[in-house]
Image (cartoon, rainbow, N blue to C red; front, side, top):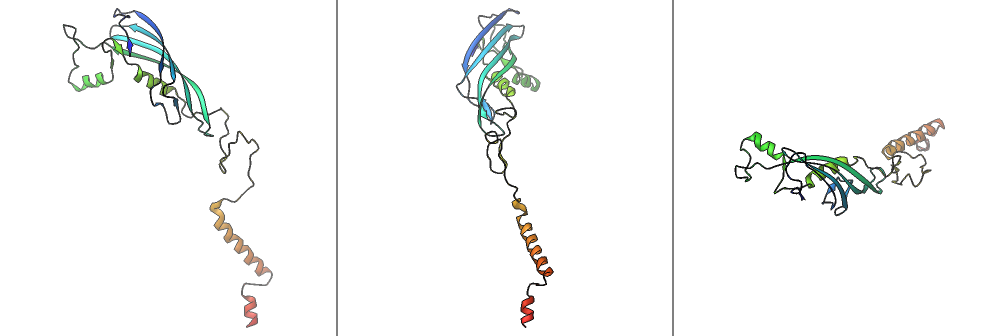
Length: 203
């Protein structure tokens, strides 16, 4: 939670903050993300406006994951920019917070709006969205990573000259066996020794 009381509510008032926080759990995707508890460096600019407090900032954090081509562990850094308006809660004549209207449109607008609570705001949902959207969809250890050998799974970056002798596709093995039998049969016919010919001659 971040406190805006020192900022005040006079439109145009500004305050800058530098803060380091611990990364929350599950800040990332299945293949890359910020480790839980890692240091996230925040540079924030708080500006009081008529509707609330406009928060603009940049987050920098370490990333860990695996290369989608060769599956090796990788480490990177991310930088995510964000901006969000935290609205003042609606109040009555006595300054007490009141609930939003019961109509569907009002309820939907309230659901999409972030509010200050006792002049405090929670940055985590905004930070989470910004960091996840900044992550690479297909992280790689290096731009020209050749990946893995499709036959044996060897990491091709470690073995630039890696290759295999031409081998038959296992899916064609049965057909090749049949073709080989046919070839042998044709060869026997050419030589005049058809299968079973010797047996007929003996009879």
